[in-house]
Length: 112
Length: 114
Image 1 (cartoon, helix red, strand yellow):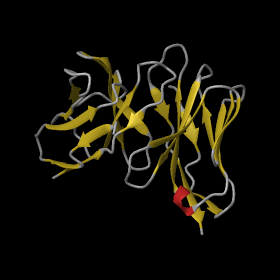
Image 2 (cartoon, chains in turn yellow, red):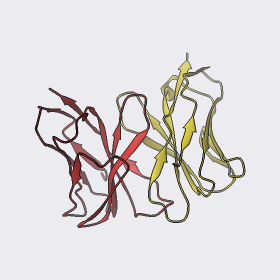
Image 3 (cartoon, one colour):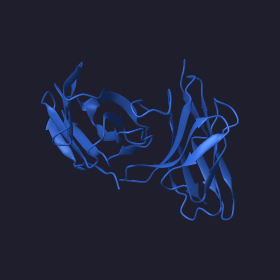
C-alpha cells in the first residue's frame, strides 16, 4: 500500500514567521508531488507542484524535494493569518500510476 | 471562467435511497475523478475516468456508481448499498490521465443521512 505521511499538527507559528510542513512517501518510484491548501469546510486548492530534486519557489511558498530521502516539504515565508488552513501533500507513483495518493494533512495556525 | 461545478452543495439521503451528485467541468480536461473525504482523513479515490464511456474503480468503489456519457460530465450515484455515505464528496479533473498532471477540485458536496 503506497502511503503519504504527514504530521497532523496542529502546527502553530506566529505571524511573520516561517512555517515548515513536512511529508514523507513510501513509494520509492514516485515522481510527481503536489501541495494543496484546504480551508475549513472548503475543497483543496493546488498551491505547488514539484517534480525534480531541489527547491521550487513561488512567491512566499517554497517546495523542497529529496527523492533519496523520500521527503517533500513546504515552507511558507512571512506567514499570515490567512495561511491558516490544512495543507495536503499528494504524490503519484511512477511508471504510469494514475492514482494520486493524499496524506491526511497538517493543520497550520498562524497566530496574529 | 473555466472550472469544475459540483451540485448540490448539500444533500440528504433517506434510508434505502439512491442519490446522484453532479460534476461538470468546462476546462476541456480528459480525466475526471471522484474522492471521498471523512473528517481528519485524507482523500480516498472512488472512481476515475480517462475518456467518455470508460471509467475505473478506485480504492473504495463499493456502493457507488458513475457514468461518463459526455466529456464534461461525471456524475456519481451513491447507492443504498453504501452503508456509511456521510462524507464530503469531491470531484476533480486533470488534463489527462498521466502521472504528472495536477488535479483541480470542485467545491464539493456534503452528503448526510436523514
